[in-house]
Length: 348
Image 1 (cartoon, rainbow, N blue to C red):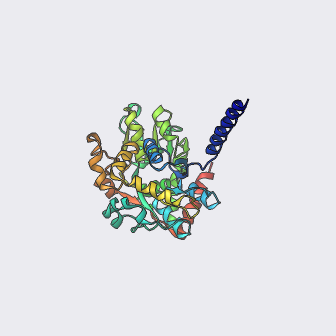
Image 2 (cartoon, helix red, strand yellow; image 1 turned 135 degrees about the horizontal axis):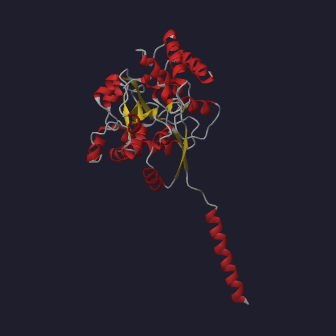
Image 3 (cartoon, one colour; image 1 turned 60 degrees about the vertical axis):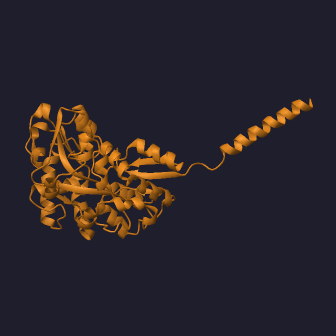
């Protein structure tokens, strides 16, 4: 009986110890708010293993949607991934944390020429450049053959309901502005109105404004022509030999998405470790081969596979840079674009 009680007590003790261990401190969680298919899942797993943490990815499909969610109190994110013009807006409004470069030694790998000539946050005080891309058009070459390299392909009424434009205010208005020979950063109300009227004409032919399902839509054949982000479309083209892409002769938007830490972040140290991890040239190279976007990490090129050393998405040509234009924050004049976009979306 004594031995039996001793065994019972021992088992109870072991069970209690296991219960206590199970109730112990859980792994830290890094909550990341980013675009879809924008970080190689295998790299996320490696980061989790190295830092004994869990990375939770939440997706947004437009800068304005992301901003509105955070502004409305959607806290809980440790790391966000806005386009540079939106990063500046958020920083100007006190929404972003100042970065500690001593915790991120790999940011020294970021392209100095890009920082000097193109970046908005040239000192990386509140953001670190992540990926550079451009807006282009993908199409079903098997069904359509070659198409004109102009934004006006969306005027083709024969393809009504088989085309999409991005659900992104600056991108889509920017395409119409460039079509009419104007800057995507114009502050001129007449030029913005002209662009709005052009989009209303295109709207009659498109299926929807979309920044997400266009990838599967063009791949499946549901859509024949789509406006999209270079990396997204190159991912699709890699798997779909019946598709091709073109860059409109009128010019297109260039964009750089940044990593930034909201002031409301709970795991700021872990967020900086994640940024540092992605700036490692070997990691950046692997990430480029997953996203098909261009990481501004010059040393990464030597680690990219031979077949991708001159990939047009990972290593953007001088012609694209020459014909492209980066978005800038327009301050109070953003209201002109918001008004035009609201009118476009509400129009029947």
